[in-house]
Amino acid sequence: MNEHTKTDGLPGLDLPAMPQVLERARPRNERMASGKIECNACPVLCQISPGKTGACDRYANHEGTLVRVDPVLFLRRGPQALAEDALPLDGSTPAQPSASGDDFFVTGVGSSTTYPDYKPAPFIVASQARGVDMVTVVTEGIFSYCSFKVKIDTDRWLGPEQANIRCKGEVVGHVTTAEYGSQMLSLGGVHHLTGGSKKEGRITVEMMQALGNKQAVDLSIDGGSQITIQAGRPPIVNGVEEQRMRVGCGSATIGIFAKQFWGQCDEVVVVDDHITGVLTEHQAGKCLDMKPSGLKVRGRKSTPGRYFQVANPGTGWGGTDIADPLSIIEGWDAAVAWPGLRLLMTSTTGEHAAWFVLDEQLVPQPAPMPPAVQRVVDRIGENCEPSMTSVMFLAGAGGSLRAGVTENPVLLTRAIKQGMVNVTCGGAPAYVWAGGGITVMVDVMRMPDHSFGTVPTPAIVAPIEFSMTMADYQALGGHADHVRSIAHALQQGAWHHDGAPTQRRDVRALPANGWPLGAPPLLG
Image (cartoon, rainbow, N blue to C red; front, side, top):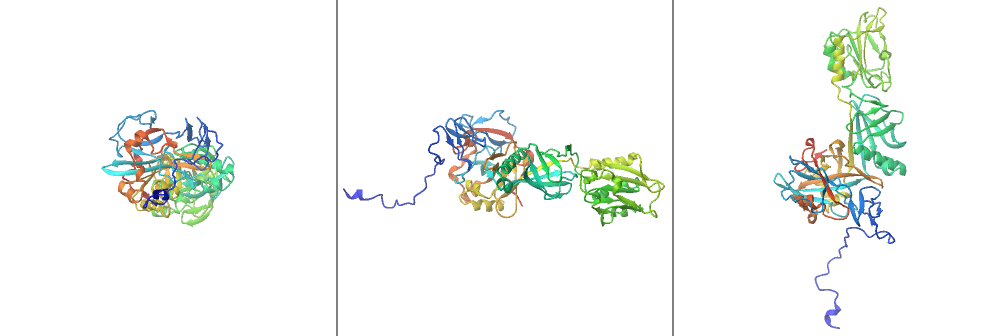
């Protein structure tokens, strides 16, 4: 034995041991069939046979390699024609060395994921936009803490506030506050996804995926209505498709059209389940110096010409439960009213309207509506917005997926709040809520079709992108070793090869969205 054989190494090489970072974990089950692949893309860890997909239908075993089965989507601007078919990401497509961030943007749709969140995001793409070096980091986030906020434009009563909303018998959300001309719903959320039974979680995630992908969903509200809702479509309430969002409450309708009523009517009642308006008592009627009519309306008087609770909520006139508008009239002051008085009753959408004339006993008698009055009623309808269902995806992205962007995730959160990092979902602008974390909200109609997927945990899968300058990315400790050029991403795809998409598809960017690069975040 000589002197050299007594050492285990050379002086100065006693560095801290580093973990061996595998592209995928070793299989949990050593008895797993040799042809199977254990998918690492979510906590379920499916063991996938050759030619098969996992439980989520998003990952497959393709000849012994785990692949993301959908193409990754790129947004594109410019006059160039788009390929009809998806393009392979195996280097065989023509190189585009001049590609820039001014005409291509990589989205998270189909990009694959960072899970289990110790590795960099699958696409960290460098490009130049307007001459500035930019970086876009994209991934498909797995969201348990997420929900949909749904705005339904209608004057119909859908159900009591806080009432449970059910899908296929399972509770999947609740009714929240009514807004001006709209009813708000909250659907999904972590407690329905994971806090109840397995069936509740499964149906909740299926409902959320369908709603996010702009498909129709049938729901029932406890003590309320049966509704069918779909993003960008009119809601269907109890089998009837809504047409109009009310122009305003009864008081607002009185104010808007008071001058047009003047000279045509002696009294106007605008029936509404929130505020029913009476023209001659209303300040608008006073300003027009209208003669009092002596009309007495049921309900609780709020201020002159404005009445609450004239009837119960419902699907009748003005979102009330009445079919006969005269039922809200308590009587007439005989000392003030007069035979021949002309009375218009209408709803806030103009869908319901009736014309009456008082007889000698001061009893309203139905009569044909004069054309001039009908034109005002028609104008009320004309001024109503089309009834629509708006679906907003709301998710907390302040968790582990940030590690796919930087080794010090809090720096990403701070950079967003400082307006340095734009946040988009499928290229659509995402509103970032005030307060801690990265809580984003985005209109699903601005996102590409089929942006949402699921995993059986259950949770929703949705795209998210973070765009910033290269200098800022370096400053917040980004994964610089995994940055690839936009030309490389267009030809070769993700930086990794385990669970990566094998194809890309180019889609047109929506002009209304603006271009994600070089834009500031929408901060709350």
